[in-house]
Length: 525
Image (cartoon, helix red, strand yellow):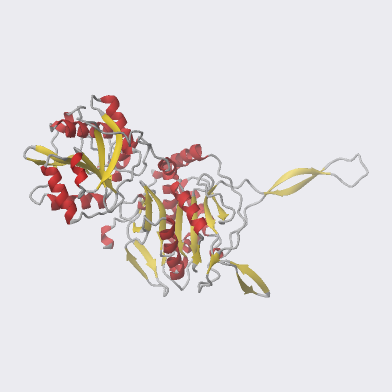
């Protein structure tokens, strides 16, 4: 299985992308501030984890600045020069480490000191950001956060790190505020320090309670977290006995729209960020842990503005109006993330209304393939990132729909491979005697309204698929009538007309032109 992952390589040209993403992040977010938050008592259970993983962070460098001082009275007197300690300005905070776990007490020498689980590796973020600042040519720092004093505003801290060994619990009120933080564009990074099981169980339970309708999923090889800076392939792990092995990446995540908003590693990364290991637990080796951390930082910077954009959705102001003979957009519900681009359809309908003679209703409905109401719509649209499966009732409903003259448009959101493979498999169940075939350049679809001969793709398409400039749609025709139109590359991101830095798709205007031609074809044929 690990062979399915391509080997990682550093991409030096990505430094410029990171620099531009950092500038764009600042223009949108403004100054984040760098103050520390005072930890407060938390809820949790006494655990079995270690109390110390690494040394405390090194003190910040100090410089001395010249000043003036005066000798004791009497005056007048000539001022004497002196020097005083002065700390350089702290860098803006990008990630906050969240205080987790109850207060415990441990003996260190003759002293009884206060300890909490999140403090076992106190310099993990300092070490990671110091390393990534040097590698990526940026300048960011970390903060310490706690639930009592945090604002839950991603403009203040775009990401929160949950790390530790022991069990922890979060109150219902905090869960609600964390859910709002994520939906507003914030990111949560989870890490089971030393691969500790108690923390793993608690983190999974917390995410299930915070986002109950969005389970943690294993990240697929084409998730941008694996390629935002370094091209990562198989991971190298180290076990408690010091032995190492290579295996599939362990990262899991939760998506909000086209953004991975929660990323979690059940194998230790934070000790690797700090450059140390221990004879316990399961961890990713140091060099690769730092590369993963650099990808986290790069992805966070690149997707911050998208997260803020996705936190608001367009209103379909004619949603409750009678449809009569107007075109109404119907989107297929499935068991994956079926609506990742909440503003896409609205923008497409606006474009079609303003650039064609069709009577378009600003209205979107959601239907399942087995729902008889699907028969009332000339076009069904379907998208997503992940694998999905149609039920037998769905298959029967779609056969009936297509047999009655209906048409479907589907695209792999962000160009994700999992949805691409799933759609090919499931549409073959509907039409076992037909295959998706490339639409030739002279196909009527490409000339139904706009004359589409050449198109532009997003930069990642050129990076991984080469220089292509012709539309790559495929389809299935029944008795000479086009029934299914499928795009391997994303259309919905282009309809949204907002940058999706990690998407494989069409540029905005070409995506809108293709969508318009499909709607015109569905209505007029």
